[in-house]
Image: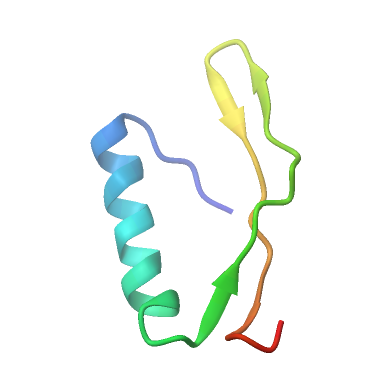
Length: 54
């Protein structure tokens, strides 16, 4: 679980996660369709599993 503020911080974290887990096909992330807003905060989960087999 992590908290990131500002678009540039969010973009950097997504790029970091992609480079570490997705780029080489190690994991696949999926949207959990649970995004919610509360005031100025967005929360969501992104479950992941191994490569194309998931």
